[in-house]
Amino acid sequence: MADENIIWPVKTREIQNWAMDSTYWNDFEIRDDDIIVSTWQKAGTTWVQQILAQFIFDGETEGMPIADISPWLDLRLPPLEDKLPDIIAQKHRRFLKTHLPVDALVYSQKAKYIYIARDGRDCMWSLFNHHHAFNDVLYDAVKALPDFGPVIERPRTNDVRQYYLDWFNDNGFQFWPFWENIRTWWEIRALPNVYFLHFQNLVDDMEGQMRKLAAFLDFSIDEAKWDKMVHHCSFDYMKANATLSTPLGGVIFDGGAKSFVNKGTNDRWRGTLTAEDIAAYEARAIDELGAACAHWLETGEFLDGQ
Image: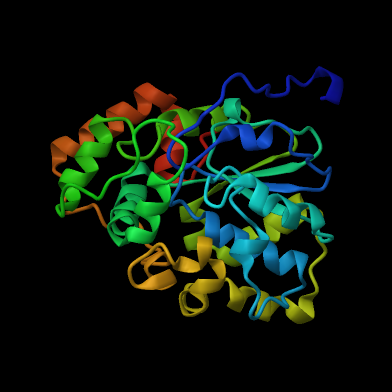
C-alpha cells in the first residue's frame, strides 16, 4: 500500500486527568526515528523500554537510568517544562512512553510505535500491588497539581477480587478507561509503523521477540553482546536494578522501585475470580473489542487474517 493511500490517525480530543495531560504532545517535535512505547498500563511497558535501551546503547546499560532517559511524556509529574529540555537534548535515538489512546495522541507517520497489551485481569492483579504501594509522595504531589477532576485516592479495599470488580464495573476506576485504549490501537494495527506485542509473547519467548523488535526498528544486533543484552532484560536483573527502570526512581512507592517490578507473571486471578466473574469479563471483552481482538488480548495469538 502506498503511503498516500494510508489513512493516518488524527488527534480528535484531549485527555487530562490526575496523571496524564495529552496536550504535552501538541507542540512536541517528534523526530522521524523516534520510538513511542504505548500501553494501557501494567502490560510490560518498562520491560520493552529495557529491551529498546539494549538496542540503542549496544547492551552497555549498566547503571543507566532508563526511566529518565525514556520518560512517560504525558505524565504530569514532573511537568513538561521540567523534562522537555532533557528530551530535546538527547542525541541518541529517542524512545518515549505514553498511556494515551490513539485519538488523544499526536501521531507521526515517520516514528515507530510499539503497542503492548495484556489480559485485563492480569493487568489488574499487577495494578493491585502497584496502587497499594503508592505513598504520600505521590498522593501529595498529585493534590498539588492544577485541578483536572478527581484525584487518585488510596485503595478502598485490600481484597484483590473486590478491587478487580471495582475496576471492571467502573471502567478503569481510579485510573483511566481500559477498553477504549485497546480498541483505538487495535484499529491501527495494520499501519506500517506500528508493532503489536503481547505480554505473554515476552514471557514465552523474550529472545525471539527481542529479535523481531530489532528488525521492525531497523537495529543491527551485535551478536557478541547478545547474551549481555538478554541478561539485562531478565526479570531478575530488572528487579535487582529496579531503581534505574522505575519512573521517578521509585520514590513514590513504599518499598521503593522493587515494589514497581513485582511478579511479572500471568494468571494469578485464576482461583480467585468466580466462574461468573470470568464469564462476565470474557463477554465484555468481545462486546467492547470484537472476537478477534478479545482473543488476541487474552492469548497473544492473532486469528487468521488478523
